[in-house]
Image (tube, rainbow, N blue to C red; front, side):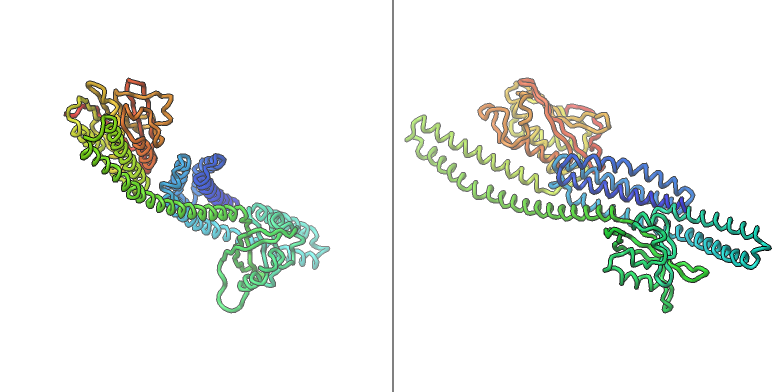
Length: 555
């Protein structure tokens, strides 16, 4: 019985730890509070050793060991999903990327784990019931032996005094052993007769409800539940003793327990009828499920909050679509009118304008064109945030060569040495990663414009953990590292518009795309000695997508 209790206790511990992992991960993903990380990592690190301990306990139980081995990968996957949720929360991306997918997958995995644990719990409790039945039968035999010994001692009190003493000594040892067995149970145990009266209980019952064993003896089970539960409870126990129909099988129900001090708390009651020589009795194993209910309530609250957040996100996306439409039509229309009238001035009234007037009109048209470029960049940034990720296996080398060819076609007279590594592949969205390379290559092309012969390089470097870091390097204007924090902020430009034209949106767009791929991006530069932009791409398994490569110049 002790071994079976250890298995049940270990199952409960693992389930509780997984609930703590889920609760802490979702809390951090939603709130971003660092205080949730410590309980998350503590619970997550405790689960694998506990699973190993459970397998060790079940080494002599082939069926139970197979069940644990089968559910172990699901537990590992659940921990991985929760870790991904924490990592997204750490990057403030949980609300905008993968929220519903991770939530749904976490719920599905937890349901599989709960179903498997429930099956194992029932099997172990069935084994426990068999052990309890054996104990109850043994107790009944001890009682009958004691009764027979007492009668015999009364009849032959003078002739067999020594035998009576030995029988009483044996009874005391048997009852003491039974008490030890019942006392070792982690849950409360109550035995009820056909009258609904308590005829036996263990020490844990007294601890749970505040009554001594003497106070419980002969009392109704109604003493242990609030008034509103007493009628259905009486009917529940009466069904076990009803002469009509077959015997009620083992059942489990949840209700409220009532402590001696009036305090109510949630309990789970598992009952099983046992045939004893003095008649049918019902054993009730009672477990305090306060902690489990608190965790379930917290998870339910977090799920509702997640649904609310998802609805807010959906509404925000609709507002963003409306804003994009407004930018595309309402702002562009008057801008085009200004540009059209400026062109009329240049074409039809140029001879009536002095040089200063012509310069003003040209500046006006240039500003209109710049504003058009900014609007296009804003719409691109908006689309990057709303577009669904279509992840596929990509040939990054081919994609990089295509982008480089487009740039060379626009200005074929420029002397630029392109060094693009061969064999670069990745898992990602082809359209979005093309936007990344277009912006990074476009910047390298732009900021090397003053070089008589420029060099632009695209490759990948291995990291110590086996992952890959991609990079775009040039030998152009570079930048001051003291201002590097502004690189990926919209409209924050490190070079004057008169030096290098731009919208200030490109690198912000690149950062959003990389983050949507759950990667990172950073840059290093030296003024007049070029810049290097590095980024990573992370797949669903949490490892880099990059492959080995051999650097080579394209022919």
